[in-house]
Image (cartoon, rainbow, N blue to C red; front, top):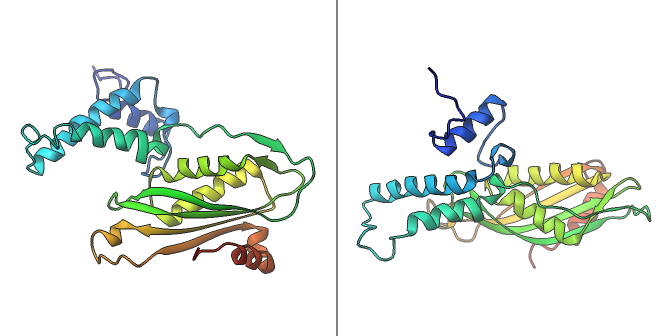
Length: 233
């Protein structure tokens, strides 16, 4: 008799993965999988990751039984990944206060710099940076509270990411939420996979942008936006 993929005796990660695969849903490092996690399973996943992280420490030949500094490191790391630095994979999007564009605003709005933190999906090293968002609303656009831009950015960034994909995800999310005529996202960040390892170049930053709608078509609007953000501040 075959074992049900929802059998509670299976590791919780196997059950979640099986739901994703049955639904033919992608579960890349920077995808959100909250819809496939059932109540109570994050707690079980914490225990599973803690156990496997203990195995990693053992394979690194770290004496977690005698070393008082690392006795609880496996659980601390597991909790950090699931509830902090990779939280955006496992929880639904934060609630967003929305307002109708009663005054039919149609001028450039800029939000930023928003401090963002992520982790490189190649080495899990920190990415620390700033984000600027430009919005060209129209009479049918939905306006969202200022702090909600920061909350949505945190939700997108708190996953293993590469910078180019992260701001593209941010642009897609805001285009769907706000439905503006145009949207621009610029990010500048330090990548500790370069600072801390490899070439160990501490001076290099990465800057990239995504332009949608009127920002892509209107060079004057694009120049206005880029002139109003100060990457060097």
